[in-house]
Amino acid sequence: MYKTKLIGHVAVDSGQVMVVDPCYIRELWRGNSFISDPNEDGSYTPTNELSYDGCCTATLSKERAGQAGFAVASSSGYGDGEYPVYAEYNDEGRIERLTIEFISDDNEENRYDY
Image 1: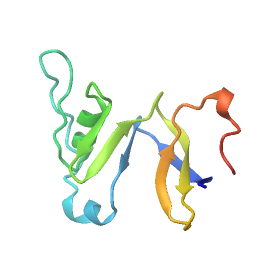
Image 2: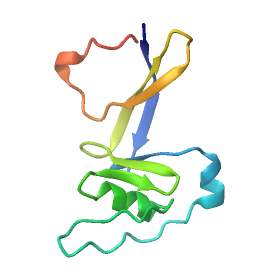
Image 3: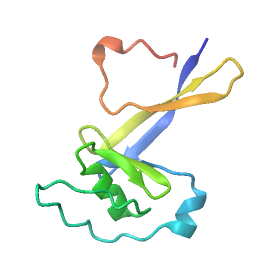
Image 4: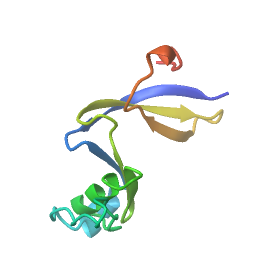
C-alpha cells in the first residue's frame, strides 16, 4: 500500500518549474539567455539546452513542457505561486513518484495523508 505525504512547497516566480539533478546546474547551466524566436505558427520549439531559454521554449511549446538539457521543464498551471509537492512511498519506504499539484481539485481535497 502506498502512502502519499506532503513533503514541501515549490516556489514559482516565472510561471514554470524545472526538475533536475543539482549536480548538472553548476557544470552545464548555460546562463540566462533570451528566449528563442517563435516558429512561423507562433509556437516554440524546445532548444534542449539546460538554460533559462531552454526551459522557456519547453514551457511555451504546444505541450507546455519538455526536455531542457538534463532537466524537464513544465509550465505551472496558472502561473506564479507556491505549489504543494507530494511524495508517494512504496512499502519499503522508498519514494516512487513526486507530484506537484498546480491546480487543485476541491472535490479531491481528502485524497492525501498529510
